[in-house]
Figure (cartoon, rainbow, N blue to C red):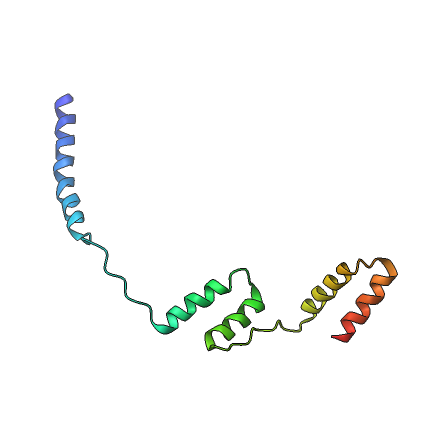
Length: 112
């Protein structure tokens, strides 16, 4: 029994050894040198860094402006969601509550 087990293990090791050596020969010796980034790739990397924290349409608009090299910062789109956000911010700053807040919000949302 021990002889058969030893023979089986030895046979397995002999069969696996060439596969292991062939796999080692296929591996690259060293990583290839990094290519320098093109102008557009560098601009994309810089714009991505600057767009950190922006999401959705705000990020899209910022990236479009940045990639085209426009110097003016992108203005947020005047969507109802953005208007509501801005009006809520202003109402919070003024510490409005109840009917006063309701009237302010109504006028603010209509004005924009």
